[in-house]
Image (cartoon, rainbow, N blue to C red; front, side, top):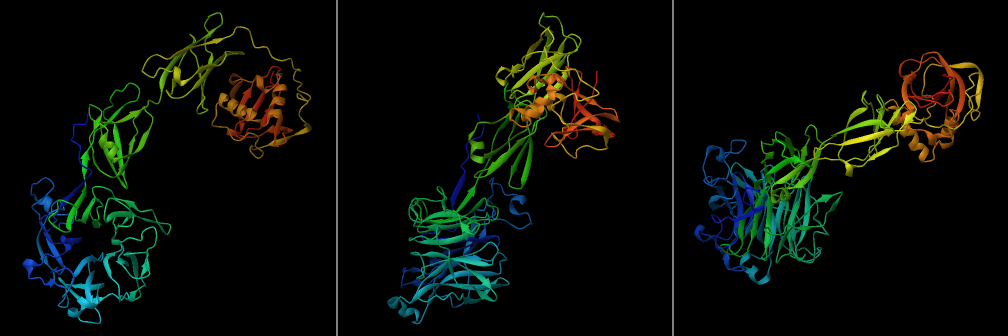
Amino acid sequence: MNGFAQTEEVTVTNLESINSSKMEFGAVPYGNGLLFTSTNGEKFNGKIDKCNTDDYFAKLFYADPDNSLTEDGMRTEADMLDANGNPIGGNGCGFTNAMPISIDSKGKFHDGAPTISPNGNQMIFARNYPGKSNFLNACNDGDVNLRLMSAEKVGNEWVNVQELPLGEKDFNTAHPAFSRDGNCVYFSSDRPDGVGGMDLYKVCREGGGWTAPMNLGAPINTTGNEVFPHDGADGNFYYSSSGMGGMGGLDVYSTSMADGSWSTPASLGAPFNSSADDLGFTVTPDGQSGYLTSNRPGGKGGDDIYCWKINKAPVELVVEDAVTRGRIDNSLVKIKETTQTKDYTTDANGMAIPDITYRRTYELEVDEPGYEYWSKSVSASELASTNPYVIPLVKKSFPLGGNVIFEDESIAPDSRVVLYNLITGDSVVINADAAGKFDLDINCLDDYELIAYKDDKVSSKTPLPASSIDCNGGENAVTLIIPKPAPVFVAAPVCNCSGNPNPDFNIQFGAPKSISRLGAHPQFGNSSNLSGPGFYFKLKNRYDKGRDREYLDAVFRGMGYSGFAEATEFMFAETTLVPGITGNMGYGTRHKVKYVTLNTRGADLEAFRIKAANGCDVHFMKTCGNFFFFCAR
């Protein structure tokens, strides 16, 4: 059982130090602290909105990081600085000294929901802005709307406040959010060309201005309200909607752009969403934390700002033998997550204990000597919920011992043994010793066939399915029995070295054609990497599929057999021909035969020899698979 207590995947924490009984919302990281919107103007001599809310006007606030709050509750120098040596806000969920910031003297009304450009030099925020009539008369004619304003940072001040030219008149535009590259701004608006309620729009920089607002359309916008967009550093686009069902009120959804289209939005679910309104979702650059606004039960009043964080947890990984269940120590486990790979080595109990981050997927790899390579894609939740997570390794091979005897139970010394893998098609050929004994390595998961032969005597094929292999370290043994009588071959004409040994071929006589290289007209292709039995199975595969069947039958009839069906692995042996040898060669798709002299060198003289019943031994050249025969009594 896992020795660690189950850790919550995500922690959502109320930022009590900056929340109040009023409304706090729209938090975004700014500098080392937090920028947000609040109507808590009582102790800051704020002004009352007597027209709409009868509460204090919303203003922008900034809170410093509370460096006394760290992950482990201990304040150390390392906890206080980020990778660049700058102070950080403890565990990212502690802030203090919240104070309103002044943008300009004209900010008499509501300012809120800011967004900061990636370079930190531009702020866009929403402002309650009077139109034709002055603000005092606006209560009656409703001519006060939310518009987007832009400010530039000069030193520590925000100056040059100007309205974004988005054509606002009789509608609201709010909740701005810069795109990740800073070239575009997303926002929410109830302008008349929308789908319904508040819709999400996008404008991008163009020359010295901005493009016309573009509605993001379906599947993002609905007949409900879509508000508070956020182009996340993790590659996802977040927003809140009341038009997609959900858990209640406004819920947070995510989507992403692929091939010019938005994917189907997915609810973030609990604990991000609740039965209340959940909005203003943001992701910090590390992708593991961020902020959220909600009026869920348990808050301090109205909308509160929450900090969310995806947690880490230690997990137990065990590497063991898949059959014996024995733990494997000193085994290297590679854990890949995106572009990062970490290595862990199992201890004496075959265990490694890495830290994983929830809501991520990891690639696990183990390449242990003597075992098959193992890899798997595993979610963090699966790793954390399995106690412990077991990595089962399968041994590459198990020993197989055996002996070869004749039917009368006498020893068949120095016989040949062929092990054929029915799964991979590979074959291994070895010699038994003088006592007829042999040893092979087999894979525990594959099916095999074995055959033994000595001279012209061959055993029947002995099946060795995986189900019969003892993979628990026990003894695997097999006995191959070779019959005493010699094989009976079909009567065939004696090889005529001065004439045509095979009337099925159109042999052209005369002066032999000199061949200095092979492969120009390959018959069965380069087979230099195969053993004799391997080449047999290559021919057999073609024969079984009906390819070259007539040709192969003719070749073997020319050797004194009834056809290729009589061929077995034991007939095929590897050999090297002598330069200048003369014989008949068949080549091409029509299997023409020519009388040739092989003036080749090196690999072109390597061949597979098939022992004939009538003296006409046949060779298939390794480099091209061309058929070549000559008298070899």
